[in-house]
Image (cartoon, rainbow, N blue to C red):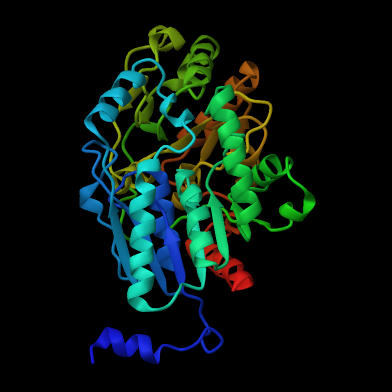
Length: 429
């Protein structure tokens, strides 16, 4: 008798097991070099539940793949990579569309619809080979295609389903749906909200925004689970350069631009030019063809603000550690429900943070940490807060210990967040 057959015959019943077995679906997973891949990998690494992961096997062939950072699968029972590829005409269309509207592709209701048949077939074969179903199904969006596939897997498996959202779906201000794609997305989102047994959001503000459209009974199955950071002080350098470098790590596109920082710097050079002596600002990530000179870069001294392309995740952490201070810049809005995963990495490296962000999730967290915050639409406040931030980071060569409220930081430790997630799973088991 094979080992696999013996394991299937002797496997305990659900009531005999103390830990539920998970089937997790996440299109993004390392070596994908994006925040969703990093966050899913981190969460699965720290939970102590038997997990089978289904993710995409694909290669974009650009800086969104980091093959030097292949994820270890030691924490998983099995990692099943289901091939995904795009036709030549679709790749051409994407390059063409990105020249005019970098977000147009994301307006489609199900970006990875072609992946669905292969995933469903793979899961069917996997369950059949083991003669048993998982105890809990978990899907991670974005992409929201994972939740659309989750609808079919829920129907086939008949097990509790947890849908985890890193961002809002229909209510995402960065999507700019047209009337047709919005109506389709509204229908898809409602089906997911109605069918899933548990809905997880990364902030209370996101939960409130998304669930205000639905009855209270549906809201009652919603929970908040923040992004998490890993403590890596022993593996990354904390050396500081002679000049004071303040960094923004991440992409900028659409309405999220460095314009409010450029304006604040321009005003500071007039009111207090000596304050910026030996200070340099760096942006690390894609600018998505933003017209930076028209936003005010051309009016600033050469070398005050510099731009660098996307780097690997490990390099991005090293750049955060070596910075004197870190920047968060969000799009202008009445409120912002987004909890950027890079902000949680900032929290983890314990460096001073200045957020040019509207009232909402990120602003609240930065304030609780003891950082500096201004609304991007308030030019005077942004200039004043930037001046205070620069004075702080340039007034000392080394920080006495880790910066930021330690009680607040502890809430985002990966071990703490993983335990919360395990509790949510147990509630469904």
